[in-house]
Image 1 (cartoon, rainbow, N blue to C red):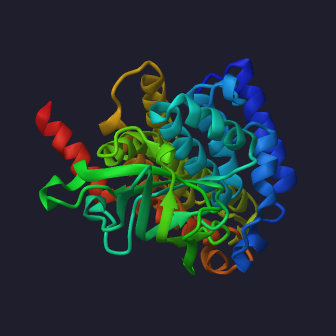
Image 2: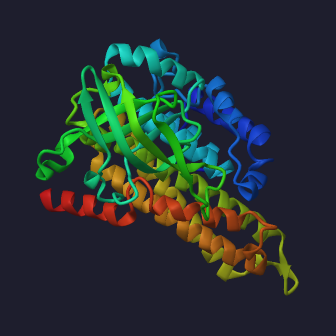
Length: 385
C-alpha cells in the first residue's frame, strides 16, 4: 500500500497481519464465493481470532482497544481482497458494537461485547424497511410495551449478514401516537435469533457483494425482554444516526479498498499487455488513466484518515464522514470503470477480476446513505457554517 501515511509499528503489524490473512483465507476463494453467492460463516471466527471484529472495543471486553485509523487500515486490506468480507467487518465494527459501547448499559456491554469482539457472534444493524430507505424515519415496524417486555412486529430490509448474525441492533417505532414525532418515537433493541417470532425473510439476489448475505428480517409478535432496550426508548434513531458516522467511514474505506484493487490490477495489466509492439502502459492514454486513478485513490485515503484522526480527538465529524463516503464511493465507481477500459474486452469477462470489482463498487454509492443523501448532509452543513 503506497501512500503518504506514516504507519506506527502497531499499525504496520496490523496491516501485515490483515494482508497475510487475506492471502491465505480470502483471495484464493473470493471469485468462487462471488459466483456461488456463498457466505462462509467460518470467516467470522477467523476474523474474531485475529481481533478484527473487536478492533475498537476496549480490552476490558476482549477487544483490541485501537483507534479508528488503525481499524480503517485493516479494513482497507480486507476490502481490497474481497469487499464482501469487508462489509461484514465494517458493519460489525462500526454499527452494532459502537452503539452498544456508547449507549448500552454496563450489563448489556458485559453480555454482548465480549462475544462480538471474539467473533463468537456476528453483529448486524437493522434500520431500513421495504418502504423506508433514505427516509428511514418513516419506518413502520412497531414495538409495544407488554409488562416488562416489548412485543415487536414488522419487517426490516437490506440487513447485511442478517441470516447469520447473533446480535442485531434493530430500530423500531415505540410511539405511534403522533406521526409528527417521526424520528423521536423510535427505540433501539438488541435482538437475537433465539427470540420467538424472529424470522429470516427474503434473501436478495444482488449484482455485487454476492458473498455478503443481504436479507429481510421479520419480527412476528417477537417478545423482547425489557433489558434489551438500548437507552431511551424514543432516541434509537438518534443513536443510529450518530453511529452512522463510523459506518460511513467504514463504507468509504471499503470503497477505497475496491478502488485500490482495481488500480493494482489495471497497472499490472498495463505492464504486461502488448499491443502495436509494446506494453499498453507505454501509451499516454493509458498512463493518464493510471495517473487519475492514483490521484483520486490517494486523495480519498487522505480525506478518510484525516477524518478518522479528528474523530479520535473527539471532534464532530458528521459532514466530513459524509464527504468521505461521497468521494471515496464515487472514486471506486470511477476507478473500476476505468480499470475495465484498460483491460478492454477482457475486462468485460469473468476471466479477469475487474468486472467483479465494478459490480462490488456500485452499492457503496447506495447503502448507509446514498450519494444524494451525503450531498444533503454536506450542503446543509455548508449553509450553517
